Image 1 (cartoon, rainbow, N blue to C red):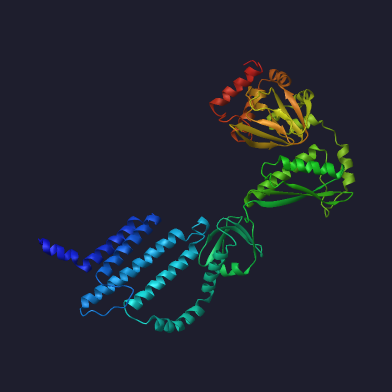
Image 2: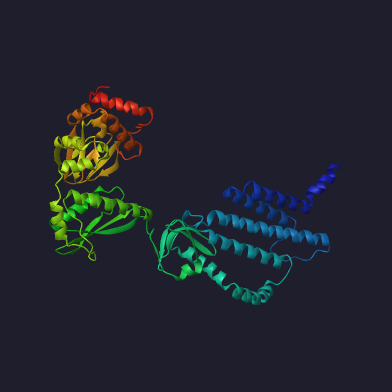
Length: 506
């Protein structure tokens, strides 16, 4: 074994000290602290400072060209020590860049700039090693490599164009990850990745579109997600002007008020685009929370337009270039058709009563009561048990739930929607309040009107229970009590409750 003097000599050797410090620093910062950028930066700075103090203590100045030692071993050691010092200096700077060089708290957006800065740091470290370790004139090296740089630049002209265009795009930030952009040539999609060479878009068909950065830098584009994620949309409808324009505008406003998909602020608008003896063209404009919701919102608006127009007794006008008989002839043919009363039309459109026969529907329709409510009137208070079913004939309503001190909007109702089936069929209190957004007309079906049908044909109870169960399970009954699950074993209990409530014999 070595004695204490020998161990002291070994520990005092600058080669052992510098080598040990370099190995320990590399293991700690490059392996142990790799998942923790902030701690990694602190470790890099600590070991770099310790290595600097150690080299200066042994009269080794890594950033100066010192006199050449006589011993070959000393020359190799000093050269290695300086190389290790410059590498640690580069690592410390890179760790600082990784932690602090983040644009708007979005690390992916700053990747190109980070890589560029890191590349410059490595280049500076290499040139410093060449100058201070090998005593090679850097100026001569740069001048000599200029010719090769020109040749390399010409050979990689396209690639370099993409690289510098990518840097310009990331600094200018016309778009970010997640934005939906549309190019002037019609290409559109959501930005999913940007790198040195290209930008990747995911289009509406879920296909990946790869665009070179140099192409994006030249072509014009529209960012549909800027300045915020909300997106404006509009659609046009043509209506036969059988009533005044102001009344048609009110119908269209009720359409927008009935929508669950559009934003209430800024307020949606209705504008008359043209008016002739055959048609009135109206444009509905609105906003959605994100470009991806524009399509579903338009589908909902078209459905609401159809329902409100039918409820108001209006007719959609034919397109200008459509072939066929004139509107007057179509209206006369419509007049010749047998008239079906409004209560029967409403029952035909409700899934809850699909299983009823025509005679049963006529009996039920004869007992329905028409009710009207002014704007802002409360039809139902949360918690009330309504012993009747109400079908919306015209107008728009909003359902809200009070949770603590907050009022949460659950949804909106339009012509053809109905509510109160939980109280009518199983005697459950309503989980939401209903308020009229416009003048509202509803038709009411009381429990007393439905009781004779259930006594005459008890099987209706199972049919109503099955429809109500599907409606709740599929989320169509948005105002059902929270936690209501009516499947499996609960289905039989639901039928039992209906039979008990209407006193139907088992």
